[in-house]
Length: 246
Length: 246
Image 1 (cartoon, helix red, strand yellow):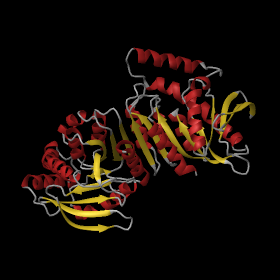
Image 2: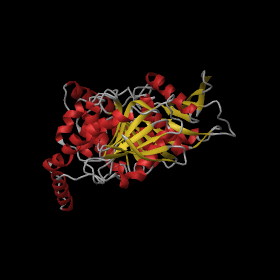
Image 3: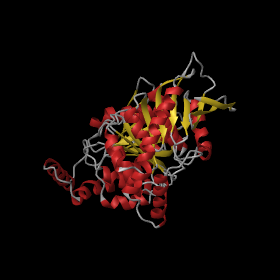
Image 4: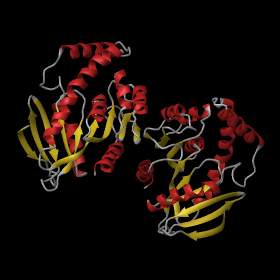
């Protein structure tokens, strides 16, 4: 992990851009975090639109988490931002766009081609990032995962024991295979669902929530569209992490 | 409204039993409430099991609300507690029990016979109680409705303009006709759903949530069965009222 730049935000949060091999990422730590007072880490998931595009929403989530006493970190997803595309994903994305434009359902084959390789590639990267992040002074476990892509969050919740709580954003296509994986999730899960999110399959989100094997799981559905998560729903997710990571 | 008895609970909450004509009820006001500093009122809905049976859960909700600065009040439902039964409801209840024991779905006819007359009878009573309660020193609007029977909450949200926010508990049968009424609800609504509540039709609860015409509506689904609403879900409902009634 190589730190490329750092800046102190006006609320005292330290923002550090890093690279992990070829993968760019950002780490935010609250002003209070230090080697002798490390803070738990939340991984900030996001849709594959590129870190640069997502930055305003990510930094807002990071500031809120820092105010609650958490470090946060995120990395560029495979095939996003400056990272190389791979042909199968491009093909699947074109297929998805065609289906959406034609007002047709996106087929299981397209969803699988779009999401499954992304999960397979991204999850080991998040785990490698975790190795590096947890070795830094000022950052410690337990670790939370927050946001989307929900299938990445599900896989991480199953395979990564350092992640002990997940607040998942139901806003992306879910391959059939992920419902089986969801049954293996046992950590506390909090699902955010935007009820009238036109780009999201509401029934799939409800089915996925139903599938989680966790003893504690909660679903918070609100109005406001894909990017319109209301403040009070964000607050509920923040309290979920405060309950489980502190 | 006639006050039958009063006691001061250990947290300073004043509990007063009253009768409104033939209808028994209970009013709880925080120690701080006075004529010069009246507090908003939350009506505590409950299943038709009788106030005496429901008392432990009601007083717990009342204490929590009082700590948040709210008065709370509840009245006995028609056909519950010491109040006279009516034959059609008894017949419907027997039909429901037969269906449940046989593992069969409860028919629309039985649900209608069980719930619709209850709503028709109960709602004017809650409104009459509201007239009296809001004339008391120490109690003021805006008013919230909290809990079940969810169809009573829906009807009140439609017909009673003094009620400006409703946290509804999805734990009872919903007559088909209520979905139409739900479309007329425009006040902020927060729905509590116990995901694995065996006595509740989850899909009906989701359909009802979908039907609400409110710009702000949220659904909080948790595990724990009908009576096992977790503390954090209760907290979210409490914050909903703090947001909308203060």
